Image (cartoon, rainbow, N blue to C red; front, side, top):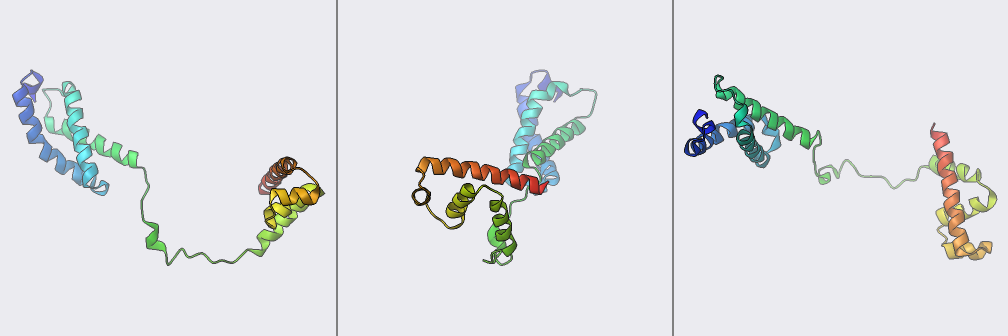
Length: 170
């Protein structure tokens, strides 16, 4: 490393070739949970860091602790980048996550109670479109309103329902 820092390109290339297997084993030991591909990426990051930061190594200090610190920081960075997420295919939980097709009766009652808090026309529009499955056109014809007016009234009614729900959740 001393020779490399003094400009000896041959010594620098030999140093990097000698360090790669040592650093690879250090990185794999510290980052075993990251997988082999990620460990190879970290090795490349460490080699790049050595190249960019080699001037910070003090020649009166041993080289190995400086290298280990670079490797440790790069492994920690990889764990941070990955976060604490675990990826498990949902197919592994098919037997456990089977949802029943039952409707919660309390949920329907709560929805009807909230709709009842609306004015009569808004409640009628929400019931027709949201619960009974009527179209905008059908609802407009029945209530003698244009489709645009039904859309606007539905939008406003849904906003009022959202505010009511927020108040209930407080």
